Image 1 (cartoon, helix red, strand yellow):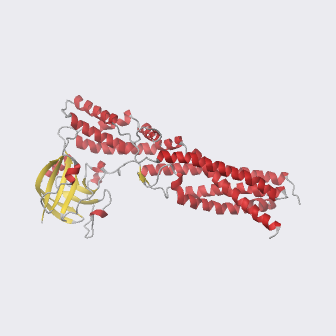
Image 2 (cartoon, rainbow over the protein chains, first blue to last red):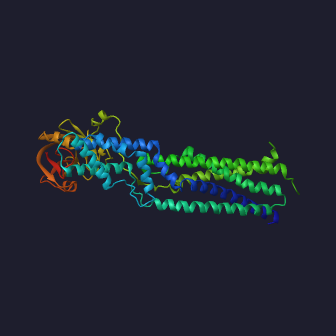
Image 3 (cartoon, rainbow over the protein chains, first blue to last red):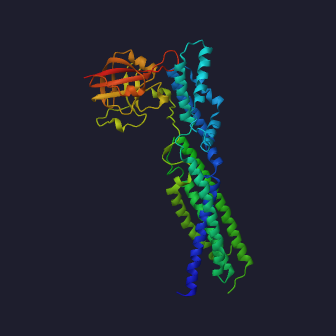
Length: 274
Length: 197
């Protein structure tokens, strides 16, 4: 193998490594500021469609409860006014990161429904047994928790903590690899223009690849592979992931345009050497 | 644009980008669960299947099936109808929000007509209407079966109801949470209907 062939092989490997690292860099960068971000996580639980679905669920379940307890549904449904569903959903999501209870089931909530029921019964001169009302208030609080609260979130806070430590590491690591490979590529070529084309071409290839990959994902696979219940939470997560990959596609296209411009600039400004 | 420039700087990275882009898509398709903050295959809230047409909910739509098996039913599937009171569709493991128009065949129940007991949860209003008839028939995927009233019992919990085995070969146990004026009392009332062979 002569020197020329070895140089070609090594420069192609470096080109591939730069392209691959660019993909890793872009993907992990976007994930650091989206999937690993606490605010991004909380905001996905405040989508208008999720709030509307939760309100419909509360209406349907409180209608059913009303038919069993002889207390009108509107009494239970006042919870939507006193504790707006969008705020309650955000509170549940925020509670995942604190010691608070993300299920939103508590003695306070039972007492709240108890007070509402008693207020209605006394206002209408109806006799009642305190323990019976306590039981129906407990059921009302359970319904609220089932619908608006978050369940089985045990390890989600740890997962987000892992995300926010791992993704930035990948971002920095892939950036360093590109930084190291770039001068290495320049050393490989006597003709600096070829060196620039090969090195920046790697970034160009990586950024187009990220744009292609993310756009293919948005078009052909939204929701595929995600299996979360209830369906409305799944669609909320799917919408969020589509948003993430749209951001990735946009940043990738920006980098593609920039790297193309730099290569064009190098083509015009740097003279070929033999 | 300069052809030589495109040949030297753009074509090769473009080909590589196509391959890497498709590889990235395949990678994301397979590993998307690693990029979402929630764990896959998990239930994070308990929502019901919302019924848009309340009138349609009252009609029982089922077909007799010789090979029907309780364990194969899907949640909320209409498996029959109680021909008593106003007539109530029987839905398997029914969502709570449907309780006004239907009754729920509880998981773990035996098939109607089989040796053992079918447990049906109902709202107290519907159960009281059913209780006015001392006998009724249940038309279901298991065929048409007749039942006659055997006894009424009170239990301290749902668990106690579901563990109650009346002294008969085959029966339907319709139970509900009791109420007096408002709210729930501490007891569950079970109405036992024995099958008439």
